[in-house]
Image (cartoon, rainbow, N blue to C red):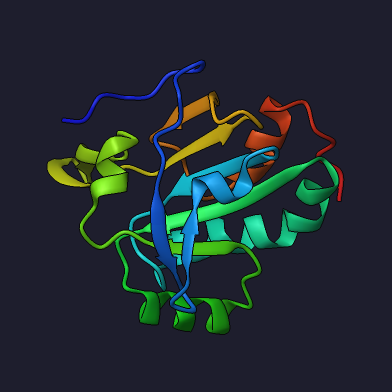
Length: 159
C-alpha cells in the first residue's frame, strides 16, 4: 500500500491528460491553493454527486483563492462524457495507469460492502501556493464532502 501524505509533505508533482486531451500539471497552479481530489469512477452516482458539489461551489472556492482538480483512472473520453452529462466546471484529469493515485496514497486496500478490495480510495487534499500539503483526507464520503471541507477550511458554507 502507498504511503499516505500528511500536512507539510511536498505534494507529488503530476502531469496528466484532461478531458480535452490537453496535459495539465500541478505546477501549472503554483502560486494558488489547489483542492486535488481522487474519485473511483466517472458517471457513477457518488462520484457524480461529489463532482457536481465541487462544480456548484467552484465560484465560491475561486473567490476564496482555490482551484479544484478531480482525478480518476478513467480515460479522457469518459471524462468528457462525464463533464457534458453533469455540466461539470472543475478540471478533470485522467490517471489510467494509477501512478499519481499511488503517489498520493489514493489507491490501495479499502473496504467495499464489507469486503477488502483494491481500488481508488476517495481522498481530498489541499495544496498550498508553494506546493505543500495543507490538508490530507482519506476515505471521505461523496455526499456532503464539499460542505465539510469548506467547514474544515473555515470558509463560509452559506450558499
